Image (tube, rainbow, N blue to C red):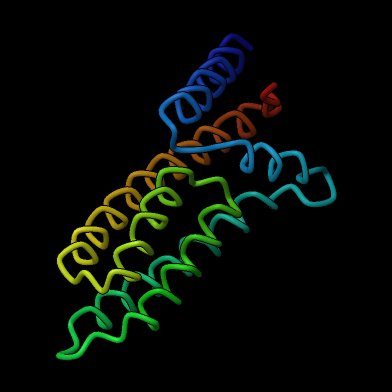
Length: 152
């Protein structure tokens, strides 16, 4: 049983660090609250959809910004979608970059947009890796016969 309580403590500390470092906000807590016995994979499913959408949006953004004549309305519409999906799972740092990205679209600032694309990619990969690590930890707890501790 010691292994389980150690994993649970690790899970709580790791989750807390994700909030403290601004990777996640309360929206993620809201998602976790929607998960129950009848829907045990809810968070993983929602977040996996976010990963799929993000990969598509990042590709669309890269393509849109490589055009000879950049359609900033189209770029902005992709960024708006990205901002919506990242804020819906509580990926706070991704959301924050998207806000800045939309300002660059408004100013039709190509350099700014390209910098934001790199930043948003970077933040997305960070949060993806961190959430994947969190889900692995959850799996370990469940496999060890423990339950996932709820964050306050």
